[in-house]
Image 1 (tube, rainbow, N blue to C red):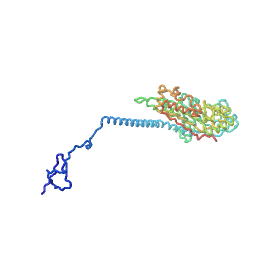
Image 2: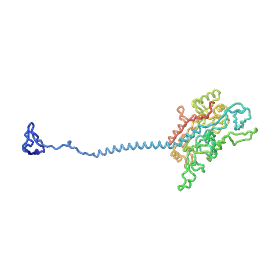
Image 3: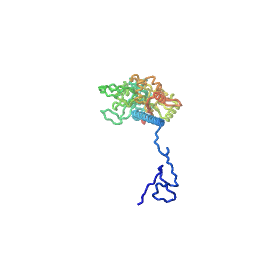
Image 4: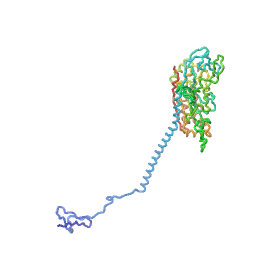
Length: 473
């Protein structure tokens, strides 16, 4: 049995290399050096051949931390601004949801306004004689008497549509002490609203109206909005604090109480027929001071504006006809359309000879007679431009604190606030409502004033076509 021995390593730990081209035994002698191989010294591995675990220096760590902090700061600012924008947008949507709902409800009822007019006849003085209320007594003392000889046919109606400045309109109706803002409108519409006692046809006539009033939100016993129930005063924490706000009021009188066909100013007539003074007693019967027929439709409504008008093309046709007849109104200009029938934002469908205080167009002037008979008397305005300005509750609280004294005074009566909002003399002339010929209109000035006060506001604006209007027939 042959023996096997491991090759012997030299002092450098390298085994002897085999001889080239020579046969050698499997068990070479351990002491026989290889004549052709020079021993190679063993070298230690260099720094590039052995991997080293090298750490970050302090400077590198500081730079990386600074870069990371800048990235996080930019990310935080982006998220913060996005969150703030989302909050503001959501707040605006939520704050004005109720205002939009109120605006839509108001315009929906306004679109149902009617006069149910018909062709009646005039008396010997040329004044229309209603068939139901046979005689009206005008300011001049003349009576519209049915027993006189008819002279011609004109549009007639026992119903009434009236719009204009809320304070003047309600004062004429005998409703004093109401802190109002902007315009008001009162009309009749087949809404079919009734009290719980009666079940009426859904198309029965109701007296309707809209205006803005500054009032408190306590219980109804105090003639407030009813937002705070009367039992709240007995709570352990006490009654909630009463706040004052501008609110959009909706007037809706039950059909069975409709006073449009009645008048309190009846006088004796030698012919046995009742005489009626021109009045707005049907509005006075609404008893608005004690909230009998009104309720809050929207909170934080600063201003309401109504502009009755004709369509631009119809306005031009009417003006050309009046001009051909030598009866063109002096206030109208083709360069500033939109103010033919309501130059002062006032409209009265009963403007035969009288009209309520503030109405610029009535039939007492011979120059206006043709215009009134053609497109105003006993007619609805074909178009009603409606503008409503709403603010959120935080803005309302700011106005109350800064311009409302102790919060119970109407801020819009503050001269400084009215000046900042550009309300002095605004919304009194229809031709100045919108921007025209490079001149800023009242509406744009109001927006600029609201922006300067940094108020969160929304302006709702529409041109409402009244289907019940009979112009062109």
